[in-house]
Image (cartoon, rainbow, N blue to C red; front, side):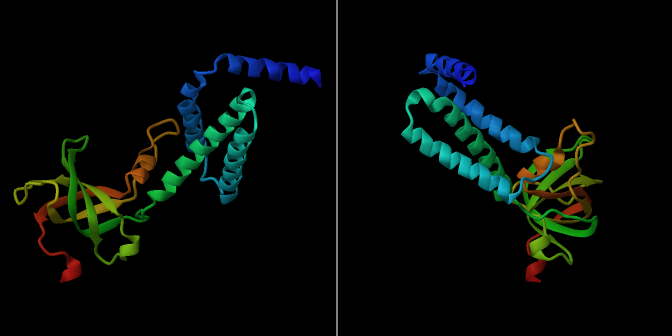
Length: 210
């Protein structure tokens, strides 16, 4: 038993020697928990969240009862668990409908962002989206549309409501396993579809009111 206790005591002595500076490791440990969430190949189950929640709770209770000398390992378990749980909570908190088919037809929405695509086309991010023959519960919260062709009918600006005809499809996944995961970014931006359109027009009354 001493063989196993001596290394443990040595590690605790190292931590004890860093007392007063261990606080700096808290955000690192929190980040480790967040990284573990994003490294998971699939969405963790409810049981996983429950186990981590119990781990965080027990670690917190133990920290109240034990001397500071023994606290670092339990503090690490607490922070890693909390980081994982925070990442999972955020992922579920921003959940929004994602288009699961290719759509072509009228698109209406309010401009909330204007930028340019890789081809230098004007690109609009819209919210308050309305799609023809699409139930509101399945309509993406936000869509991003690149405008092609002459746009002499409109000068886009944030807050302007526009209508256009275009194509939409689900946000694409990473081109390769180690590449940038646009689909993940789109999920956290609540971007449920991307596409292109022609001839955007100002819109002063939405289809729902017609």
